[in-house]
Length: 304
Image 1 (tube, one colour):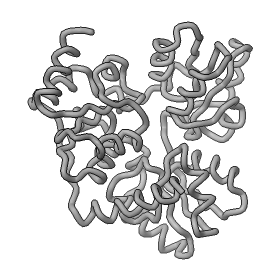
Image 2 (image 1 turned 45 degrees about the horizontal axis):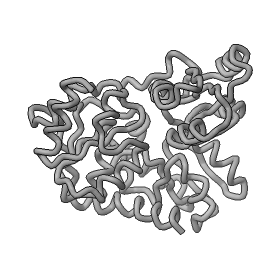
Image 3 (image 1 turned 90 degrees about the horizontal axis):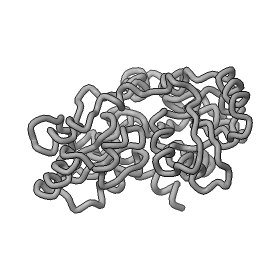
């Protein structure tokens, strides 16, 4: 552990701060975090944390979700410019127009959306809970936003429901191709292909396992296989390689890198916990309460 990391650990104790790190952050940031995981799991941890300050090492919508669930806490993101292209693809006006066009559809929003957009949605879902929640949702007609790739995966798992998809998604995952999968499998014939459902349907169709980031990591950890092609952000290849050096992990593409996630550096985390920099998340209370309804519904349906 280097001096910056040691200083961060000292300061977070002194300043009553909890550090959350999404799995796509670099490993040096994961090493100083109190909790590591997917976006919604981190928000739940933050809400239960006794700390008054939360530092979310991820992208803006993740910090917004923390603030929605824990309004009494100060929530900071180290890099103000760390946004999510998928979360920003739809705005309130565009979704309002879609709701007017499909008035008999319930709106299901991927958690990767802004707080403002969540105010117009009936329920949120994560990549790991989407199928379960949509199966249980009291509606046969669904408008799924904003990721059409995840939506397509869900649609195939729940054919009994009419699911309308909207063009949008994660540009990092969407650029992965079926040809890359075929080439990777040819280069590594003994490897299993693990993929995130944000990828294109043609890529997902070639997978040995489909799951969220944490589900992919858990699968690789528990599998008796020793070689894996990873079809999600390339930091997962690094993390798995460090945690399981006895196994081999191959990136599907050298270009599967989320540049917004990589904006945050270990120095940014230090400066935020020092109070020198960092962007505080604020949400209007009425907006927060409206957005929280869709999250509460996700928890209700997901936990039953």
